[in-house]
Image (tube, rainbow, N blue to C red; front, side, top):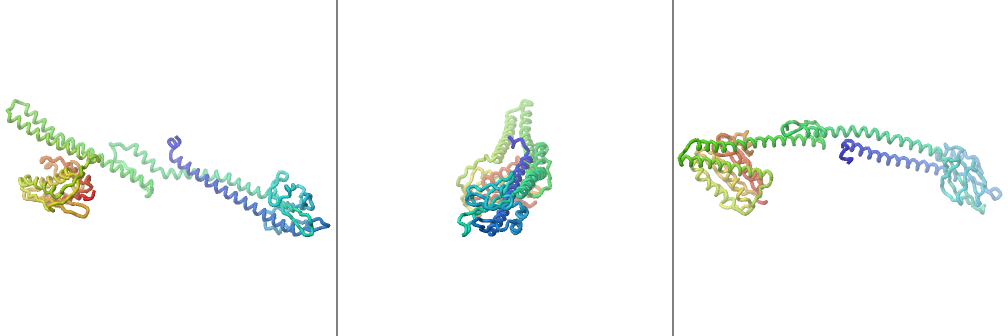
Length: 467
């Protein structure tokens, strides 16, 4: 629920602050513990040195041990610990026998509690509510039969005060750093996510009726910059797709309206007055022609729709591509001769191939029929089949008027015609090349065109042999 209602900017800042808080807490704890360890180690080193110096100055007086020099100032000044020297005469020492009785002492040793079972080593005690550090060692002299214990102690007030100041700085400093980090996190996340807000607002405002708006943000080549540019590119593609669909709808409606208008006119004329059987037969034949045109248009649209939705299935089978193309050339021979155009096949006699025979027939028949239609009398059309490593190339060449350069990028678009008036009069609907390209791509290949105005056009279909 939190992630659904809280903006990502706040969530990023919260995670950023949590990470900073954990890092600061860990660093602060590390600094505090190491400082405390260092201060205590310094105190312990000073107490150990002081105890060693005091032990060397112990004398045996009538069977009892006594401190030879009770002036601790000289001992303290020789200690390596700066904190011990700052403690001054706060240091106390005491010499105990095995019974726990005090044999000698320096300073206010009476305030120092007796060690539990005369245990040696370091310990912490509280004297009048204040913490003290105590170092206890065992003293054994050859001239003395019983063992003694030496205690050296000093107050830890200065150490604790130092640690309290450091803790106070950490307690006050960490929240302050977190506050500054929160402000920085909000600012940084705001700058980083600002373009995303613009993308969101634009996505809400853009509709199918207006896809011309763009972000046009000048951003570095990072994740957000690439997102903004990708969004602009997506809008460009959507706009182009919507324009194509609008044009497709208009062209399809126009192509459907033409035969329907002709059919309606033929029916109206036939019914306007009584006619003989020959007139009715002529009207029916004209209507049959227009119905065939509608069926052809509907089939072409269905093929395109299935191809673009990736629902056009292939029936791959062994076939002979050379025989297939050669047979199509022979099939179009009468139509080409009637127009005064020569058509021929140039390629091997046989070329095994695997593909969808029906789709390939439609592909090459569209290209050959298109070439014959656009080649004037006296011209020629040539179909060449060439085997290449890993592919087969089928080339359809004609000596027609060619295609102007400005039309070449659009030649495979639906309903696109270079000469619209002539194509419509010849029965074309502008879908043949679009279907041919989809079939070639469906076979795993591609189709390309090159043309020189006044000299003809070349359509080359490349199909892979290993699918």
